[in-house]
Length: 85
Image (cartoon, rainbow, N blue to C red; front, side, top):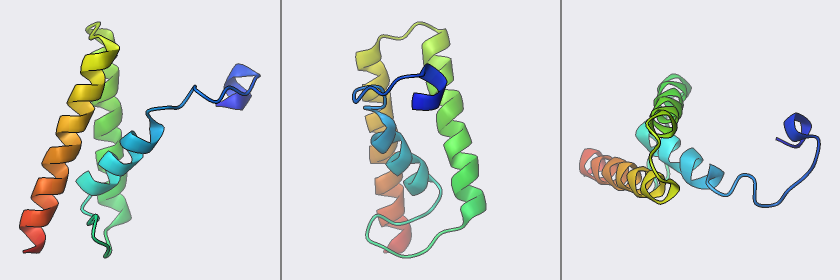
């Protein structure tokens, strides 16, 4: 990100960790540990990117983008826990 902007700012990627965790959990990697497939993680990270881009294009407020990301993460963790039991 610093190479793109030509400067380093500490607040530029505040949502990045949440996006990464959501993409990984959606890809089938359990929060409790274990293994997953890199192909499914890549596809689900692309899905998260499309979702984020769509929310920006429709003009959704930044607060509601965080809410949607959180709901997707909760859904992914719930499905992961159901799948492992």
